[in-house]
Image (cartoon, rainbow, N blue to C red):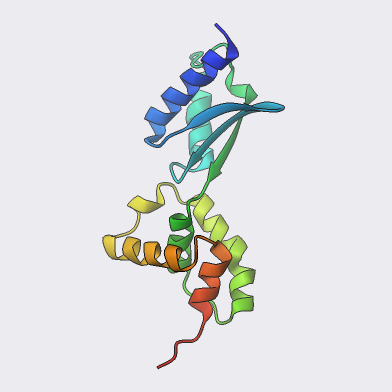
Length: 145
């Protein structure tokens, strides 16, 4: 069995466990485990470490995997909506690390909000072209009545 077979096994098992698509691919100099918007990085790593003890994914051991979770634009919009608007575009730019941390620390963001919040996030994502900074800037603009 080759390491690429182990990567396929890891991908299949972690995808089932996470209930989102998880890919395991060689990216020099290591094997990269990546997914979007599912469990947090820490949760998936802990689950993979436990499975590694049972030789899941052999001959590719858990210790050779590097985990990288990404956030969708909708997750970013949900984070902005949960945080609330900034007082100015400059304050919105300064809040981007806070928004990104919220995304990273929120597993399965789409399941944590109601339909109204999801619709608002989708609208914010579209109007902001999926850019987290632009979404924050849009929320910081004063309303004109």
